[in-house]
Image (cartoon, rainbow, N blue to C red):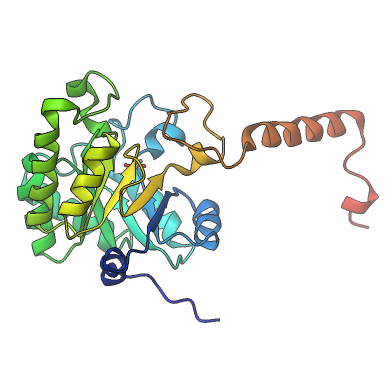
Length: 267
Ligand code: KIV
């Protein structure tokens, strides 16, 4: 059967049609295959790779070269899903020139079909410049992990008198040309209000059920990252004990001589 690649216009259309947009992260070839086979609309090559793949405490140390490596590996799986490359900290904040060049590298060298940048009104000029050169931009507002030090931790944003600022951020990124916006770690009622106000799709994570779509980190939903388990994550599998169990069995069998047998040998 022909696999029809998902495009940006189709993602926009999904909001109009009221069809919810499904997004998961992937950072390598096998997971990109599995996630695509599962039928997601968008694969986000997130800088969460820095935490769940590389073992850092935050996403801040992630580099352009590391992200390009992940994006290329994901693209080799030839996914039907739209591939969005996350822009790492300091690859787009310093100047418009840096932003355009680095976002361009994700498309030209990595093969991504869109990029994601964190920040609202303060990053609108970057979103405008990058989308003007025809690189589709997904924005990301609310709890933006690259702002961990300003926020004093990974804390819910947009409560009470902060709500207006988050709404302003949403309107600013839409106005600047973003094709979609991730709403992370904000009250569900505010996310629903933003979703009703915007014409571009909202993709929630820790933002309740009122968004146009949902994104989660693949390691979180599969129970592969036991270090953190945020309230907004639903675990659909518990793979960590399965994997350690398989490894333990292999170790036991090699030690006892039960493996390999003739069945696994050449004559
Ligand atoms: O890096 C990432 O995976 C993300 C999502 C969690 C939205 O930014």
